[in-house]
Amino acid sequence: MIFLLLLASLGLVSAACPRDTLKSITAEYLLSLSNGTPTFASLSPTNLTYLENDQPIAITSSVLSKGPVKVDFSRSLYDTTLCASYTEIVATAGHAYVIGTRLSIDPSTLKVTKIDSVVCDDGDWLFNAAGSLRYNKQENWDPIPEAKRDTREVIQAAGDAYINAWGDKSINPPFDAKCARLEGGSYLTGNCKLTFSPPFVLLNKRYTIDEEIGAVDIFHNFPFLDKAIARDPGTQTNNMLRVEGGKIKYIHENTVCQKKGCAK
Ligand SMILES: *[C@@H]1O[C@H](CO)[C@@H](O)[C@H](O)[C@H]1NC(C)=O
Image (cartoon, rainbow, N blue to C red; front, side, top):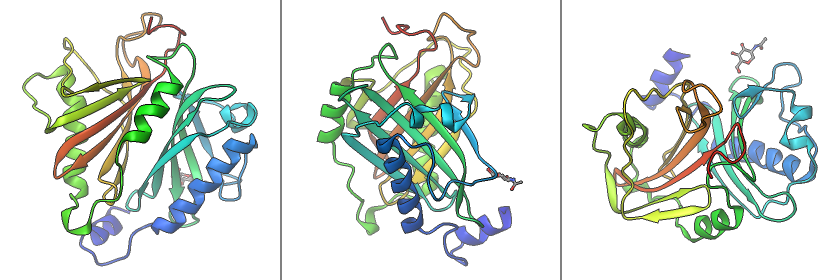
Protein backbone atom coordinates (compact mmCIF):
# COMPACT_ATOMS: atom_id res chain seq x y z
CA MET A 1 0.00 0.00 0.00
CA ILE A 2 2.80 2.43 0.90
CA PHE A 3 4.54 1.41 -2.31
CA LEU A 4 1.37 2.11 -4.31
CA LEU A 5 0.91 5.49 -2.64
CA LEU A 6 4.51 6.33 -3.51
CA LEU A 7 3.96 5.36 -7.14
CA ALA A 8 0.71 7.30 -7.18
CA SER A 9 2.43 10.38 -5.82
CA LEU A 10 5.02 10.06 -8.59
CA GLY A 11 2.19 9.88 -11.11
CA LEU A 12 3.13 6.34 -12.16
CA VAL A 13 -0.22 4.77 -11.39
CA SER A 14 -3.66 6.27 -11.61
CA ALA A 15 -5.43 7.41 -8.45
CA ALA A 16 -6.42 4.68 -6.02
CA CYS A 17 -10.07 5.55 -6.46
CA PRO A 18 -11.60 7.44 -9.35
CA ARG A 19 -13.33 10.66 -8.30
CA ASP A 20 -16.53 9.61 -10.07
CA THR A 21 -16.65 6.39 -8.05
CA LEU A 22 -16.28 8.34 -4.80
CA LYS A 23 -19.02 10.68 -5.99
CA SER A 24 -21.48 7.93 -6.77
CA ILE A 25 -20.82 6.08 -3.49
CA THR A 26 -21.28 9.32 -1.55
CA ALA A 27 -24.54 9.96 -3.42
CA GLU A 28 -25.75 6.52 -2.29
CA TYR A 29 -24.99 7.45 1.31
CA LEU A 30 -26.89 10.74 1.00
CA LEU A 31 -29.87 9.00 -0.54
CA SER A 32 -29.91 6.47 2.24
CA LEU A 33 -29.82 9.28 4.84
CA SER A 34 -32.69 11.12 3.11
CA ASN A 35 -34.72 7.93 2.89
CA GLY A 36 -33.97 6.77 6.42
CA THR A 37 -32.75 3.40 5.15
CA PRO A 38 -29.47 2.31 6.81
CA THR A 39 -28.06 0.43 3.86
CA PHE A 40 -26.87 1.04 0.31
CA ALA A 41 -25.35 -0.98 -2.52
CA SER A 42 -21.71 0.02 -1.95
CA LEU A 43 -21.77 -0.75 1.77
CA SER A 44 -19.56 -3.75 2.50
CA PRO A 45 -21.90 -6.55 3.58
CA THR A 46 -19.17 -8.29 5.59
CA ASN A 47 -16.73 -5.69 6.85
CA LEU A 48 -18.19 -2.47 8.16
CA THR A 49 -17.09 -0.34 11.10
CA TYR A 50 -19.59 2.38 11.93
CA LEU A 51 -18.61 5.11 14.41
CA GLU A 52 -21.05 7.80 15.46
CA ASN A 53 -19.57 10.55 17.65
CA ASP A 54 -16.61 8.20 18.14
CA GLN A 55 -18.74 5.36 19.51
CA PRO A 56 -18.87 2.10 17.54
CA ILE A 57 -22.54 1.28 17.00
CA ALA A 58 -24.60 -0.78 14.56
CA ILE A 59 -25.57 1.15 11.47
CA THR A 60 -29.11 -0.02 12.20
CA SER A 61 -29.07 2.13 15.37
CA SER A 62 -27.42 5.11 13.67
CA VAL A 63 -28.77 8.43 12.40
CA LEU A 64 -29.43 6.61 9.10
CA SER A 65 -32.16 4.63 10.81
CA LYS A 66 -33.86 7.38 12.82
CA GLY A 67 -36.21 8.31 9.99
CA PRO A 68 -35.69 10.36 6.84
CA VAL A 69 -33.37 13.37 7.20
CA LYS A 70 -34.48 16.23 4.96
CA VAL A 71 -31.15 17.38 3.56
CA ASP A 72 -31.26 21.11 2.74
CA PHE A 73 -27.61 21.37 1.82
CA SER A 74 -24.56 19.18 1.42
CA ARG A 75 -20.99 19.59 0.29
CA SER A 76 -18.47 16.79 -0.31
CA LEU A 77 -14.72 16.35 -0.54
CA TYR A 78 -13.26 13.43 -2.48
CA ASP A 79 -9.86 12.02 -1.59
CA THR A 80 -8.71 9.85 -4.49
CA THR A 81 -5.43 9.00 -2.73
CA LEU A 82 -6.89 7.77 0.57
CA CYS A 83 -10.04 6.46 -1.11
CA ALA A 84 -12.40 8.38 1.12
CA SER A 85 -15.00 11.10 1.01
CA TYR A 86 -16.20 13.63 3.54
CA THR A 87 -19.66 15.20 3.40
CA GLU A 88 -21.19 17.96 5.47
CA ILE A 89 -24.97 17.92 5.69
CA VAL A 90 -27.39 20.51 7.01
CA ALA A 91 -31.03 19.69 7.73
CA THR A 92 -33.29 22.40 9.15
CA ALA A 93 -36.77 20.88 8.78
CA GLY A 94 -38.20 18.31 11.18
CA HIS A 95 -35.33 17.00 13.30
CA ALA A 96 -32.59 19.56 12.63
CA TYR A 97 -29.08 18.21 12.16
CA VAL A 98 -25.61 19.20 11.07
CA ILE A 99 -23.81 15.99 10.17
CA GLY A 100 -20.25 15.35 9.00
CA THR A 101 -19.57 11.93 7.52
CA ARG A 102 -16.36 10.33 6.33
CA LEU A 103 -16.72 7.26 4.13
CA SER A 104 -13.68 5.07 3.87
CA ILE A 105 -13.64 2.80 0.84
CA ASP A 106 -11.59 -0.31 0.24
CA PRO A 107 -9.77 0.41 -3.05
CA SER A 108 -9.75 -3.22 -4.16
CA THR A 109 -13.46 -3.95 -3.66
CA LEU A 110 -14.74 -0.33 -3.89
CA LYS A 111 -16.99 -1.05 -0.89
CA VAL A 112 -17.41 1.20 2.13
CA THR A 113 -15.68 -0.48 5.08
CA LYS A 114 -15.71 2.36 7.60
CA ILE A 115 -18.04 5.25 8.35
CA ASP A 116 -17.14 8.02 10.79
CA SER A 117 -19.99 10.37 11.50
CA VAL A 118 -20.23 13.38 13.77
CA VAL A 119 -23.93 13.98 14.31
CA CYS A 120 -24.79 17.36 15.83
CA ASP A 121 -28.26 18.37 16.87
CA ASP A 122 -29.94 20.47 19.54
CA GLY A 123 -27.67 21.04 22.55
CA ASP A 124 -24.39 20.46 20.71
CA TRP A 125 -21.66 23.09 20.51
CA LEU A 126 -23.21 26.36 19.19
CA PHE A 127 -25.75 24.26 17.33
CA ASN A 128 -28.06 26.25 15.07
CA ALA A 129 -28.93 24.52 11.81
CA ALA A 130 -30.53 27.63 10.27
CA GLY A 131 -27.31 29.58 10.89
CA SER A 132 -25.20 26.75 9.49
CA LEU A 133 -27.33 26.69 6.36
CA ARG A 134 -27.31 30.44 5.81
CA TYR A 135 -23.57 30.98 6.25
CA ASN A 136 -22.44 27.79 4.57
CA LYS A 137 -24.44 28.47 1.41
CA GLN A 138 -22.98 31.92 0.88
CA GLU A 139 -19.37 30.72 0.74
CA ASN A 140 -17.58 29.80 -2.46
CA TRP A 141 -16.11 26.29 -2.46
CA ASP A 142 -15.99 25.94 -6.25
CA PRO A 143 -13.21 23.84 -7.78
CA ILE A 144 -9.87 25.68 -7.91
CA PRO A 145 -8.54 26.20 -11.47
CA GLU A 146 -5.96 23.50 -12.16
CA ALA A 147 -2.98 25.85 -12.48
CA LYS A 148 -3.73 27.37 -9.06
CA ARG A 149 -4.22 24.18 -7.06
CA ASP A 150 -2.17 23.52 -3.94
CA THR A 151 -0.59 20.12 -3.39
CA ARG A 152 -2.15 17.82 -0.83
CA GLU A 153 0.90 18.38 1.38
CA VAL A 154 0.30 22.16 1.43
CA ILE A 155 -3.43 21.68 2.11
CA GLN A 156 -2.79 19.21 4.92
CA ALA A 157 -0.07 21.42 6.43
CA ALA A 158 -2.55 24.32 6.63
CA GLY A 159 -5.09 22.09 8.42
CA ASP A 160 -2.46 20.74 10.81
CA ALA A 161 -1.14 24.24 11.55
CA TYR A 162 -4.67 25.42 12.36
CA ILE A 163 -5.42 22.74 14.93
CA ASN A 164 -1.87 22.40 16.29
CA ALA A 165 -1.62 26.15 16.96
CA TRP A 166 -4.38 25.87 19.58
CA GLY A 167 -1.96 24.42 22.12
CA ASP A 168 1.24 25.92 20.70
CA LYS A 169 1.35 29.69 20.33
CA SER A 170 4.58 29.52 18.34
CA ILE A 171 2.67 28.13 15.34
CA ASN A 172 1.27 30.76 12.99
CA PRO A 173 -1.27 29.18 10.67
CA PRO A 174 -1.43 30.71 7.18
CA PHE A 175 -4.74 32.58 7.51
CA ASP A 176 -6.20 34.57 4.65
CA ALA A 177 -6.93 38.15 5.81
CA LYS A 178 -10.65 37.44 5.38
CA CYS A 179 -10.57 34.03 7.04
CA ALA A 180 -14.03 33.02 8.28
CA ARG A 181 -15.00 30.35 10.77
CA LEU A 182 -18.41 28.70 10.90
CA GLU A 183 -18.62 27.04 14.30
CA GLY A 184 -21.93 25.34 14.87
CA GLY A 185 -24.29 28.01 13.53
CA SER A 186 -22.15 31.03 14.47
CA TYR A 187 -19.98 32.91 12.01
CA LEU A 188 -16.82 34.87 12.73
CA THR A 189 -14.75 36.68 10.15
CA GLY A 190 -11.35 38.34 10.07
CA ASN A 191 -9.65 36.47 12.88
CA CYS A 192 -9.42 32.69 12.91
CA LYS A 193 -6.62 32.29 15.45
CA LEU A 194 -7.52 30.40 18.62
CA THR A 195 -5.26 29.55 21.53
CA PHE A 196 -5.83 27.41 24.60
CA SER A 197 -3.68 26.63 27.60
CA PRO A 198 -1.39 23.69 27.16
CA PRO A 199 -1.27 20.74 27.52
CA PHE A 200 -3.60 20.44 24.60
CA VAL A 201 -3.57 16.98 23.13
CA LEU A 202 -5.38 16.28 19.87
CA LEU A 203 -5.87 12.60 19.21
CA ASN A 204 -7.23 10.25 16.62
CA LYS A 205 -6.90 12.38 13.49
CA ARG A 206 -8.57 11.17 10.33
CA TYR A 207 -7.98 13.19 7.16
CA THR A 208 -9.84 13.69 3.90
CA ILE A 209 -8.01 15.87 1.37
CA ASP A 210 -9.38 17.15 -1.93
CA GLU A 211 -6.90 19.05 -4.12
CA GLU A 212 -9.59 20.03 -6.64
CA ILE A 213 -11.70 21.81 -3.99
CA GLY A 214 -8.58 22.90 -2.08
CA ALA A 215 -9.89 21.44 1.14
CA VAL A 216 -9.02 19.20 4.05
CA ASP A 217 -11.26 17.72 6.68
CA ILE A 218 -9.90 16.41 9.98
CA PHE A 219 -11.84 14.34 12.50
CA HIS A 220 -10.20 14.52 15.91
CA ASN A 221 -10.79 14.75 19.64
CA PHE A 222 -11.03 18.05 21.46
CA PRO A 223 -10.02 18.19 25.12
CA PHE A 224 -11.85 19.96 27.97
CA LEU A 225 -14.93 21.47 26.26
CA ASP A 226 -17.34 19.11 27.91
CA LYS A 227 -17.00 19.19 31.69
CA ALA A 228 -19.12 16.05 32.00
CA ILE A 229 -16.35 13.85 30.56
CA ALA A 230 -12.62 13.31 30.96
CA ARG A 231 -10.37 16.00 29.46
CA ASP A 232 -8.63 13.45 27.23
CA PRO A 233 -9.60 12.31 24.76
CA GLY A 234 -12.50 14.73 25.29
CA THR A 235 -15.24 15.38 22.76
CA GLN A 236 -15.56 14.37 19.14
CA THR A 237 -14.99 17.23 16.75
CA ASN A 238 -14.38 17.88 13.14
CA ASN A 239 -12.73 20.72 11.23
CA MET A 240 -13.01 21.27 7.50
CA LEU A 241 -10.88 23.95 5.85
CA ARG A 242 -10.82 25.59 2.45
CA VAL A 243 -7.29 26.58 1.43
CA GLU A 244 -6.61 28.96 -1.48
CA GLY A 245 -3.02 29.63 -2.56
CA GLY A 246 -1.79 28.08 0.68
CA LYS A 247 -4.00 30.37 2.83
CA ILE A 248 -6.90 29.29 5.04
CA LYS A 249 -10.07 30.93 3.73
CA TYR A 250 -12.89 29.11 5.52
CA ILE A 251 -13.17 26.81 8.53
CA HIS A 252 -16.20 24.71 9.48
CA GLU A 253 -16.33 23.08 12.87
CA ASN A 254 -18.87 20.56 14.16
CA THR A 255 -18.49 19.54 17.77
CA VAL A 256 -20.62 17.15 19.77
CA CYS A 257 -21.48 17.69 23.43
CA GLN A 258 -21.59 14.33 25.14
CA LYS A 259 -23.79 16.04 27.70
CA LYS A 260 -26.27 18.19 25.76
CA GLY A 261 -26.00 21.88 26.51
CA CYS A 262 -22.23 21.94 27.12
CA ALA A 263 -22.26 25.00 24.88
CA LYS A 264 -24.55 27.02 27.11
C1 LIG B 1 -11.90 -4.74 6.53
O1 LIG B 1 -11.65 -3.41 6.10
C2 LIG B 1 -10.44 -2.86 6.59
C3 LIG B 1 -10.36 -1.43 6.08
O2 LIG B 1 -11.38 -0.68 6.65
C4 LIG B 1 -9.27 -3.68 6.11
O3 LIG B 1 -8.08 -3.17 6.65
C5 LIG B 1 -9.44 -5.13 6.53
O4 LIG B 1 -8.43 -5.90 5.97
C6 LIG B 1 -10.79 -5.65 6.07
N1 LIG B 1 -11.00 -7.00 6.61
C7 LIG B 1 -11.44 -8.00 5.86
C8 LIG B 1 -11.65 -9.27 6.58
O5 LIG B 1 -11.65 -7.87 4.67
